[in-house]
Structures are given as C-alpha cells and as structure tokens.
Length: 575
View 1 (tube, rainbow, N blue to C red):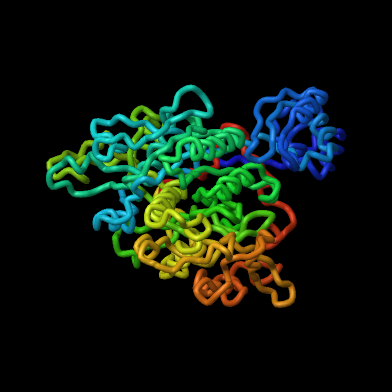
View 2 (cartoon, one colour; view 1 turned 60 degrees about the vertical axis):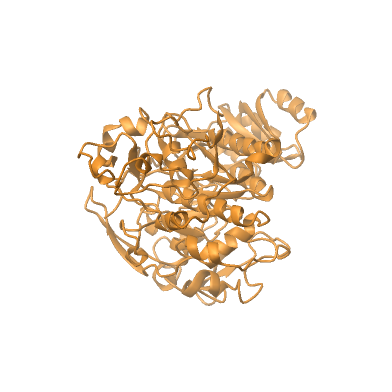
C-alpha cells in the first residue's frame, strides 16, 4: 500500500508568508504554495453563490470549475496571491485547497465475517433494511457476478450507479464493492451452495443501493468529488422519493487542517445530516501514529454531527467477549476542535466481502493473502482461492456495518431522525470491551498496547440487537446528538467534556437519566470528566505529546499527504 509522507513546512517566499497571514486562507494553502502558484481551491461564502460572485472570480483571473450550492461554495483555479486578494471580499468565509482524499483502508490477511450481530437480525427475519436507500460514496460498485450480490433475489437493488470523477461507474479500485457488500450485500453465492459452511450477508441485505463513484482506480479523490457526491445524494433523495434515501456511507477521509466549522467537507456532511440523512464516516487508520494515535481522527469524521466509526477485532468469533481493540483505528479527540471521536466502534479487522474482479486491489500482489479459499464456505470446494470473496481491514470495513444498522432503524421507524438513531446506537453500545489490549502486527511482529478509553472506543461496540429492540426514543424537540468536545482543565489537571459542542439550542446528552453521560459513555465518563485512561494519557502537560493534542494547531497542519498518497498505514490486519 502507500506510506504516509511527512515533511516540514517551508515558506517559499516572502509573498507567500504575507498571504499566509490572512485569516480566511487555509494554512496548507499558503504553507505549501508560493504566491504565484496556481492552485485548485474551494471558496465558501456567507450566502448563496450568485452571478456577482462568479464575476468577482473572473476579476481575480480565476477559472470557475464548479458551484456547490449545498455549502454556498465554488471551486476555482487561481493563484495564491489572487486568493489572498479575494479573501478580502466580505462575502468570502474561507478559502481552502481542493485537498486529496482517499479510502480509509488497510491490508488484511485472513478470513473473518465480522458482522455476527447484523447477521443474527437477518437470520430471524427482522431488520433487513427493506425499502431504505443507502448511498455508498466510494470507488463505485462492480455488479454482475454469476450470483449477483445485489439481487434480492431477482430484483436489482442497485437503483443508481454514477461516477462523479469520470464516465465509468464501475469499481476499478475494489474498495467500493467490498464496502457495499458489508453494508448491503445479499449473499446469493453461498445461498446457492447446498450445505454451505459460511454466510456473508451484509448488514442490511434488502436495502436499496445507490453507488456514487468519487475515488479513482487508485482509491484517490478530492474534496470536490466527495462534496459533489454528497450533493448528488441529497438531490436523488428529492428526485426519487421511492428510493427512500436515508443513509450515506463514507469509508474515506483525509487529514484535518482547520475547524470543522470552516472545512468544506464537514459542511457538506452536516448539510446531508440536516436534510434527514444519517451519515456514517470512517474514523481513519492512523492509530499507530506518534502519541499513541491520539488526535488522528480524519475529516469529515471530525464533524460532531455525523456518526464516526472506529474498528475493533472480533477475533473471528461470535462471542463478543473475545473482541479486542485494534492498534490502527484512529483515536480522538479531533484536531483543533477536540471533538470526542469515534462515536462508536464495530468489527473491522479481516472482514470478508465481495471482490471487484480485475480491480487494483484484487490484482495487486501485495494483497495475495487477502483471498479466502473456496472450501472456507463450500463443503465440496477446494483450497484454491475464491473468485468472489476477499478480506480487508480498517475503519472502512467497520463503517458500513453502522450504515446498515441505520437502514434497519429507518425501516423499523420511518419517522426517526439521524440524531435519534445516533443517540440510540450509542446508548445501546456494548461496553464490555477490554480496558487494555496488546496486539501484534503479524507482518512486522511489532506489538502495540491500546487503551479502551473514550477517545478509542467512544460509547463502545455497536450492538444491533439491543439497538433494534430498544423502545426508547430521544424526544425530537431535544435536538442534537452532536458529539461533545473535550478540554483540559488546568486546575484539576484532568480532561472534561462540554456536552454542547456546537452551540445548538439543546442537546440530547444530559437531558435526562436515560440519555445522561454515564449511560452513553459508561465508566469512561463520570459527570463531565473523562475517567478511563486520563492518568495514563492526559494526566499533565508534561506527558509526551500533550502539546500536540491540546495545542492550538492541528497536528496535521505540520504535514502533508501529496496527491496520490493514500491516507493509510501499510499494515496487514492484526492477530
């Protein structure tokens, strides 16, 4: 896979330094480009984009490329100097680069289903996500296997497949097909085998599937492509009410460079959330970074509205007591805003789902160990590799489980809101995860110690059955289930939570005993104080990495991932 590349910021000219002082310019726009560099930028305005704004772009010698009415923004090509000049316009809120984004993916080696709770719901005939649309904004979907995984059983459940990056909606990378299979796959392959040994149903195998391709054959995209995908999802929700689009899955991410309040990607997911669409976002796979992986949540998973999903290792067992933490799953709090993330965790280590034949991942020799043998599910099969299944690890694989669970919730109660689903999932999360896990990367032999604190597991591991059978429902009038923010109390030398992180009129957390902080975050939080792990990680300002987490800047603002570099660490799953 690709390795993260870090390099020091270099101020290339005095002019660039002058531009960098403008508060409306993103830090990476000015730190990585000279004053006369031509850059692809996203310009956010404090009002809907008009012809006047486009004329002003032309006056700054900018080439207009796209308009994002979803977030009152435009995309244009212009020099850094002209961007700095445009930033003086009182209508302009923020100007940032059109940043690269990638699939949140890691290598894996062995087979594991990883979705027993959702499979149990399916096996008893409940909660299949029937009639609910899930939008997978990813690298596309490749349908058409001999036993098409998106038929139910003879109706094509793929309502739409579009590409926002080219004219080809087919999954050339292999990530989107795998992710969609976990979230919504109908396992027609093993269902046709007498005495089959294993099933590989998705979490919501009767849901409608909408595929919006925003990542290319290398798993790379940009902010603009993802924002266009989110915008298209909202359009399709309005244009095709019978598809009942209620869920978006985003198994992708990129570094955090500014507050979620300014980040155009975060503003886009918030717009979808406020349009009544539940958004599940991968936390990222940077948990092995320096400082124990804390502060490495990727955007847009840093947004407090959406449901951000981390990964755990279910050890290929239906006994959740065997589940351990993973070292690679990104940890909170988020950079700059210190939002408590992830919100929840789900199995994401060595998860089996469908291949996209001929795709980059399937053809890459580095993934040779990611195939499973036919006799793993066919009693009359051989030990040759299956042409249908493939295993991958990462928060990308955990996220569609939550998306599928959300579809089940919408099927159960069409009046439920994204905030109510988020609150109920977090309330019913299983809190029996170990306080400490020692895990080993089999490819390198490196051992990691991971702490099960609130910034690693959020509310705990998703429990589909408990969530499905829970009859409580946070009052819609209470409002937001936005994730709280953390802060360091210099007096008590401890980390505490601000439940109302967004300034909303009201929040669900703490509004009653049912939705109190101890109910949602268990023994990790007492009142508004973070308990578990605080003495180990956050005990005082002398702890290594303290300034990185609680400083004023983003840890990612000191680094960059050039276009073409994936936001991953080259690992191979964990034992």
